[in-house]
Length: 367
Image 1 (cartoon, rainbow, N blue to C red):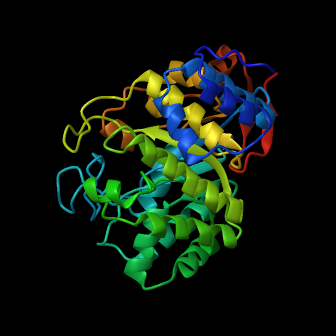
Image 2 (cartoon, one colour):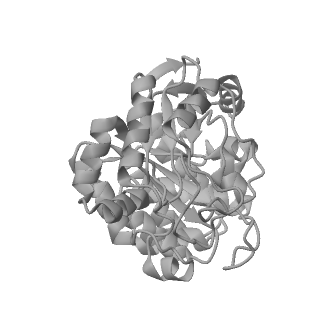
């Protein structure tokens, strides 16, 4: 396939040649793409890569987001979900309350529980283990995607166990995979500036490395759109790419735009549609060894997510039911979509909707 370069730039033409020949892009080339305003060429190149990997298929899952507690010892500058113990609006659900909530929203087609929450030091590690165990006992057929790399590091600190021991206890209780949160931007300059007091970059990576060695496949995210530089975004991707070279344990990359409810710490406005599409496309080009890039409609909105499917994205996330973390920070999207709405959204982008399980096994193809 020939790409029509819309700007007479030899460097872009060289990158296009590398992409078409399946060659890996460098840090400098990734930064160049971010600095370019030739969005259509970048999108075309990302679409070539995605079509090689996934064809016209766009995946989604019937899932439910759960949040056991919003009490958190950390005070990340971008977060509006967390509360202090005893603060108005704070909560920590008991196992019975968790099951009661899930039972109200569960239906037989649901395949995944997506669980994240605060780093609550007022309950022991066993609380988090038991919450998983009770869920698995009551809904044995549902895969449990629970606890970010930062949460695993937190559990290690409060329990005195190693990452491996923490993960083994959780998998024994029913854990199936880790979500990708807690990565934010994997540079210490960013983490210091944004008061990210949880796991360091190396600790987050080591949690996922440990999980992969245990046979636990995981997800990876990037929270972009605040004070990070374009080079830091690319360095973030390259660290994930290097770990994937080592372990082959990441299933999908999810770039999430920061939401602007907090006007401090440089978060003053939403990311532009231009930046969102470019980030999806550059992610697809840089992360040549990760199968999927997700267009997270919660942060993008449904119409921009549709466009993202021609800019390298091959996953539309899932039904969710009720998302809270991004919406507490000001997300304008729906809190969830039905199965029918997701199918309609994907077909509207002239792509083939594919219902999947957590591990990208195809459940139903909507031809």
